[in-house]
Image (cartoon, rainbow, N blue to C red; front, side, top):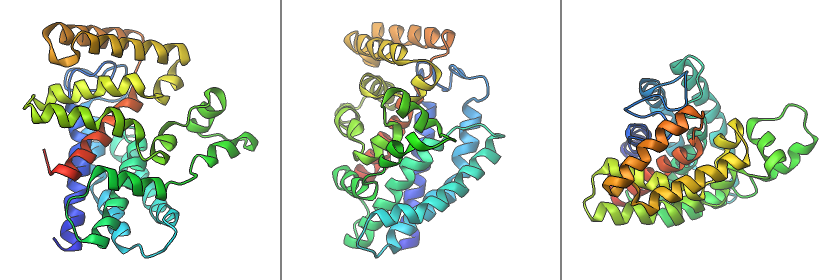
Length: 289
């Protein structure tokens, strides 16, 4: 593929990852095909509108990676930040002000830029998830220092407030680590289950449960507190002990989790973002699902 064709292909994979994440059902407390989850201002159609608005953004991030020729990889993040700011505006326009994908604009945008750079270096259309994540670490090196410096700021961002209160680094920490949670608890699960020809919906819900156990979910902390986050982790772990979404009883357990999370206004949105990252990394390495 030439650079234009390749960038279109990567954008398609990014959008497909967003759509696969939101359509996997049931996802406890999250928007899916069955309900709005613990949300009153969004549904699956809001997510579809948001996803479509980002097609050009992922294309531009990939092109930025292809054209990058500096030695300091952190400069690539500086290049795509203005593109991300514009993408957020388009997202909010598409959703009437609802934040559906702000975290994924950040994380998938960096992945697109990394893949673009690797494509320009070696010419391969598919990259290994390890190579991508290793480059993401270099691009996002020291990015959480912004959180440490927030102690002296007055107008704090959502992530900065959570860092000061709980010490969690949120999506910045995940990106800086090269998506360590995804590498350890997302990729091995999706690879194993897809080899066994498990239905894609069941695979994705099962992967989500694994990510919920290990994610320091900032969305839960923002709505609730550390006790609620630990409760969610315990519930997800219990679901996996019952077979997760791969056994009849496990499926019933997850459905009951969904009802309870909706009632208690619990939405593990950070884990959902990591599910989308898992899907994208899998397709970048193995081809489209």
